[in-house]
Image (cartoon, rainbow, N blue to C red; front, top):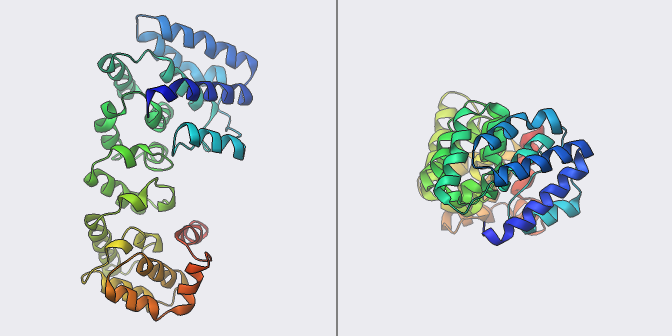
Length: 296
């Protein structure tokens, strides 16, 4: 994120809090922001960050479609739909901390990670794409995807552009695989299609084979990052999907083939003209597969 966007973004977040919290909460936060901005001690931030829920509550944010569009213009990929008022207040505090010195700023924030409870970790990880000097937090974020805390994992992996922009290929691939493993929808991983790669396709194919060998199923969403990288080794997996009695698996197969330039995959696609037509008409997309997976 370019630093010149920060004032506008901060102003938007402050207005959003005013809309979703009491005047008393806004007054409290304004006072704490000033202390954070001008204090020489990081303790000021830590105390305010910890006590935020007590003063601003934990209500779910109510965002209009216009506000969602506006926030995405301020920060591409940022989606606070599932945020709460305390999470928003904590993010405002993080953005109020002087950040001219990258080392000082990052050390202050990283110390918060080391002592945070679950709610604080959710706020910290979800705020990463908004923070100055985002490159300073890559190691912390990649370590964070190993967590067993579901809410914390979702804050990193879902509706968050930070992994797309900063994770190595290996770290991004592990995040995708874990998202499937914990039963979350791939549709919420920002930049999934852009970051698909041959190693990820191979990993997902191997995972599917392990599941099938154990007599278990895999989510049809798994094949979304695989499609562009179908090759001789993966083609039998796609043929298996086409022969399935599960309609959604057949749809996933045709979508995967539609993403592939591999001749044999294109030949399979041509054998299913009705499904191919649904894709061209916009009646079938990976978002439809995701919705079926969520409601299954």
